[in-house]
Image: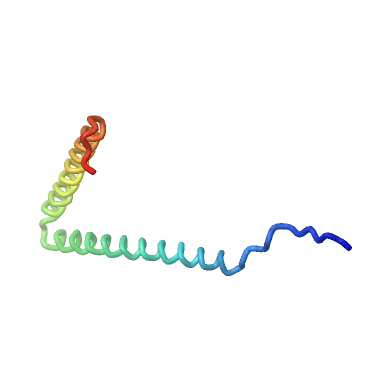
Length: 90
C-alpha cells in the first residue's frame, strides 16, 4: 500500500481569465472616461481658438485649476487639524 503524496492542488484555469477580464474592463472604463474628458477639453480649445478668444479658454482652465488646488489645500489643512486635535467627526 502506497501513500500518495500530491503537490498543491491545481488552480482553476478560469480564475486567471476572469481576473484578466475584470482588470481589462476596469482599464477600458478608465480610458473611456479620460477620452470623454479630453474630448470636451479639445473641443473647447478648438472652438475658442477658432473665434479668436483662446486667452479666455486658458483663463478658464487656470481659474478651475486654482480653485481645485485651493480647495484641496484647505481640505487637507482642515483634515490634519481635526485629526491632530482628536476632534475629528465620526
